[in-house]
Amino acid sequence: MVKENKTMKKILITAGENQFSKKQIKSLESLIIQNYKTYISHEKVCVIWSRVQMDDVFRNYKKGQPSILVIECHEQLGQDQRVDMFKICTHDWLRITGQSIDQLVISVLETPVFSTLFQRNSKCLSVIGKSKYHLKLVLGLAWSRVSKGYYSFSSSI
Amino acid sequence: MPLYFILSKSKFSSKEKERLAKTITDVHCAITKAPSNYVTVIFLSGYRLKSRKKIMLLGNIREGGNRTKEMIEQLGHGLLMGIVNTLHTATHKVGLQFLKIPFLWVWESGKVLPAPGQEPVQIANLQ
Image (cartoon, rainbow over all chains, first blue to last red; front, side):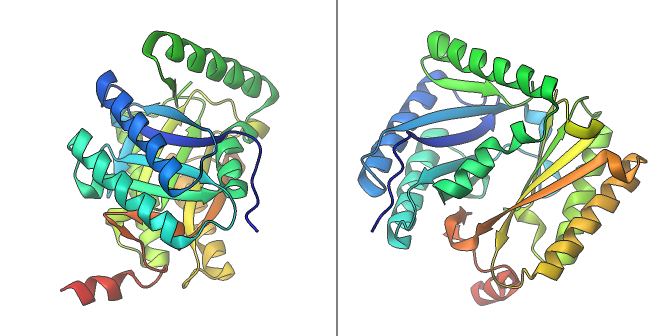
């Protein structure tokens, strides 16, 4: 039996600061949520954008700007559903962003693994560091939602 | 995948970032035999770390295939020493954590990645 978690599921997208326009982000977000409902679950899902400075990312030794999508799913998701999600998200993502296929990494992680990943940065911090991190994160998300219409935060604080 | 995040309080210079990214990519590929085109390193600054650490390396790596406990320990040691030598810092100033992700859960370059250790076979099959 599929174990459903009652908290809202999350999709964490790491992309370059100002890499995509507001219009592109809204289209991507809307399609990913739609795909999530079709291929993974009808549960509510929240998309969070993690912004990274362009010169802070290296891939294959060189500066680059891959997009990294980490999608939370319930436990025991079938691999066929996961692969369908990979395929449709790749199709939509490349069409909207114009990125090449080698610049896109997608993972669909069951909740326990996703949660470990999502909370990991905070767990490495000192007490003061943790307070500052959470404050900046919450304010950043709220400000982004109000000013841009989507949730995002800067990965460097 | 692998995806390595480097958390630090201060921002590294461009040269330091290049050297660290090279060290991490070199060590990962030498030990796991994975191709370098899958290795991503992301630098995040402004993090006040626990235990007065200078740098924390968080690695998302695939599990399964040839990733034995011994190989992961060897990888951890290699990365730690590589960072210590690159930054000329003390071992206790550097932290490391791996998050192991089943290889079937990851999609990269338009395909589900093969089991760790199977990458060269897959490349050979395509040629």
